[in-house]
Length: 113
Length: 115
Image 1 (cartoon, rainbow over the protein chains, first blue to last red):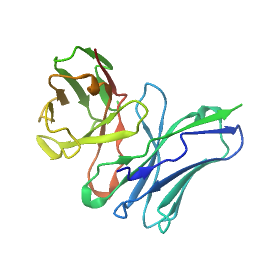
Image 2: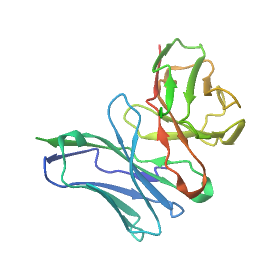
Image 3: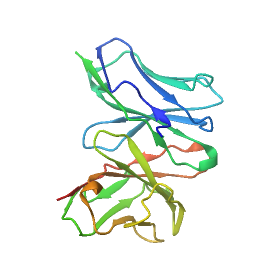
Image 4: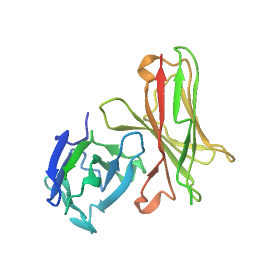
């Protein structure tokens, strides 16, 4: 039962353009969402998070949007840079289940110079 | 301020042997989580510990796997009698406290290969 899904295994964009990574979830108890970035042979690195009481959170080039009615969130990267090339994981948690994170399968982003 | 430390980074075991993975959380963090990533999959939660206590082990296989986080020293994930299906990357994460949704910070992982 995949409660967090990232339907696009890969995404390729040109440097300077916008990257949009999508994530869907099924568990209505999820109330906190995070995006992690992962390079090969390294652990995931926290990027940005959003609470369910918000619909948008921005940090520099990264913005996360949350649509609770659609159970959908997205990560926008503007402008995209070659160094952004990595696997991006969406994760979710529910307060009632403590801090355990449920991850999506990941999306490989490639930013071409 | 060192991040989450994991060792060894790579571990090779033959079927039937024991694997012992270590995790030292970030300074000041008292919450430790273990996740497993199988090839081509996302990370899957295994266990959540605080000092000397297992809080949530609902993601851990019932047999052969155990975890501890003693008062002194690193957290240990132990896999007894390893099988080929245990081959994966095992990541440890730590956080400062449970409330307010503190972000989890991950270590570099231990890549376990079972021959």
